[in-house]
Length: 124
Image 1 (cartoon, helix red, strand yellow):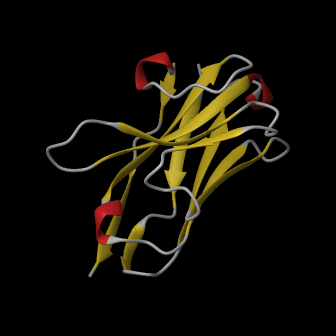
Image 2 (cartoon, one colour; image 1 turned 90 degrees about the horizontal axis):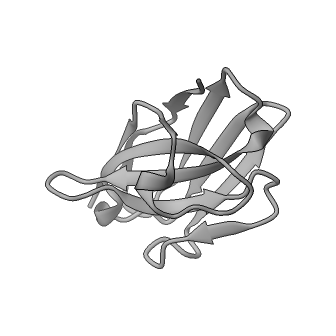
């Protein structure tokens, strides 16, 4: 089992920044690829960004490229999502997820473990 706990969400004005963190426990963190997903009211869960277990490769949804950055610190068992130039359409609950494997995974059904989510609200 892997336990994931997100933090760092909140209310921010358009153009502002937030940094989400996801702390993992229970298994060897460096064995897991990680992803950030989001779900807005009335919409499905969508991939935001993903990172290989080594941290050497990343993936971003087109809607966030150039604004959001995923990173990880395997020594701290933590994955981060730096969010800059936020827009109202970024408003959603953000989830981190873990997948045992050596690739980048972009589909929600590929992930084995999920955090409880953290709310991000961007006001216009």
